[in-house]
Image 1: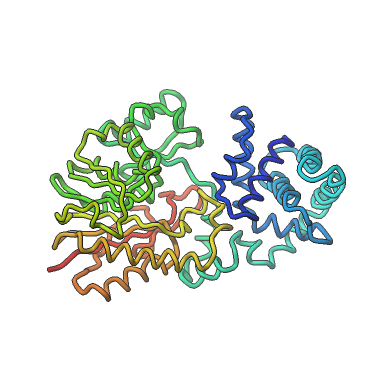
Image 2: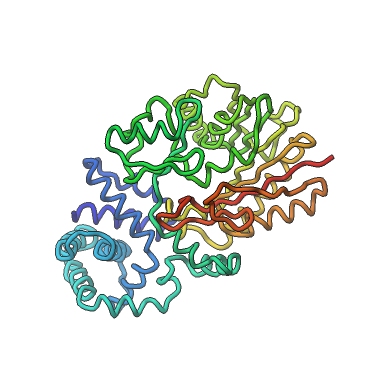
Length: 433
């Protein structure tokens, strides 16, 4: 276990101290060990970052002086996560962390690590109570993030923050061209995999596992997609024969669902050529690559080089954003984002809206989507856009039963929620004459 603890500590330190993404950090520390070891490193890294606010506050409380070594600080947080949130025996966690301390820092660090963790075991309740006075420790987010959510969502802010710290479910979207929700659930049941229907398109697997191991993956029976994201294509309301633009399409979850809704003429656009490769892979696996779809590498804010001048009946604009609504899936986001990033994303979102609007046919509809819970990226962007464009009418959206929302803001769900979704935002605009 001490090897996995050490690798997780390195990954966490890369995120906290260097601003690396967790996926980058995990790739850097991958030592080629067996799957079980890599899975444990991933579990420890995700869990530690999910609860970093509390774990870091506890680490600072445990030591009379600041811990100078970033890796030792991260290792202590990893061990505290294990003690608080896993079933591993506390004595084994401490013993292995002491071994890892020598590996990460220096032999003399063993005594310090042992003292810190033994003190926590002795004073656990009082230490946990002491850090609750700190909002960052209590809620597990940076102070600026807490303040913004409290201001933007005064009735829901605490529940939204708590939901962002929950473990996300493994949610699938059925490929309706290949099977049905009921048939996929039955197929899983035949091999002992418990799953339940969620909404019109979704299946939630009770015990998450590698999706490539699920029956139907290879033959394109489903795609991995959060239940909140599965709302996009139905809300756009495509029908056969429509000319449709997915303006920020990669890696293709929403594009492929659009192709499952109707026989449309789809342009799937993205500026990132690498991510477009994933989109093409998804089109092939889901058997959509022979449908009327054009995959284009291009900048949505500069249509000239790729647009043929013919207006689109529907535009899906799933814009780059802070991703604050998917923190439960990507806990590193909480500690990598800065308050200034939100304003930078908002400026880019306005540019994308202004660039996409002229491409929409009169009478057509544009669906604006983010995976954010910050108002500056959501309602405020749409309000400002409608002021600039008098011909834009914001339509009322009707969400399926069980979807918790406030207007167009989809609220992130607590564990076990009826419609267990990430936090998304939707606004649909109609272009009047």
